[in-house]
Image 1 (cartoon, helix red, strand yellow):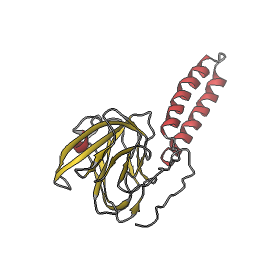
Image 2 (tube, rainbow, N blue to C red):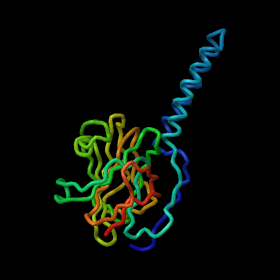
Image 3 (cartoon, one colour):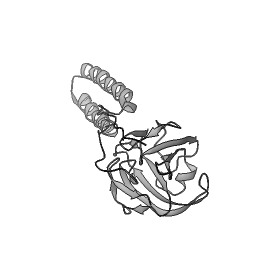
Image 4 (cartoon, rainbow, N blue to C red):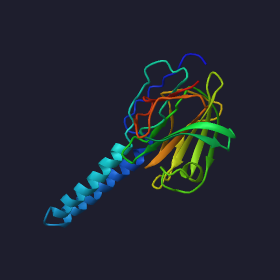
Length: 229
C-alpha cells in the first residue's frame, strides 16, 4: 500500500465538541453575571459557578483529543479503536456480512473516556453502512445488533477483512463516522466519534492472535488488541 501516511492533527479539543463547549461557556458566563448583579449575597453565584463549572469541565474532559502515533510496524497489527475497557472476547457468528464465524473484541467507553475513534488497521475502506436502532446499554450483548450503529468494513493490504462497528449506547445519541468508501485508511487516523457512553466492536478473522484480556483498559491507537494470522 506504500509508505504509511501520518496526518498531524494539531487539535487538543475534538472538533465535535467545539460548539458545545463555547455555547456552554457563554451560557455560564451570562447567567453568572446576572446572578452576581441580582443578589446581595454571593451564595447563588458561587453555587451556580461550582455546579455548572464542574459540568463544563467534565465536558471538556470528554471532548479532549490527544495527539497519538503508534510506534512500530503496523503490518498485521490490530490496535484498539477507542479508549475504554475490553468487555467481550469471543468467537461469534456474524450473519450480516461475513455469514461465518469471526473473532469479536468489544471495547466499552464510559463518559469519562476520550470518545474519538481510530482505525484499528491499515487498509482500504470497502463500505460504510449506518443502521438505525434502539439505545440499550452499550455493554449488553444485544446492543451490537439492536442499537443504532455504523459499520465500517476494511480490507487490509494482504486481503483480510476487518469489520469495525460503532455502537450508540443508552446515553449516546450521535455517531459520527469520517471513514469513506474506497478511501485508504491508516492506523493513527480518526475513524469517527461517538458522543457519550458507547461501544466499538471489532470483528476479526478466526486465527487472529488476541493480545488483550477481559476487563483490560485500552488506549485508542496505542494498545495492540490482536495480530492477524
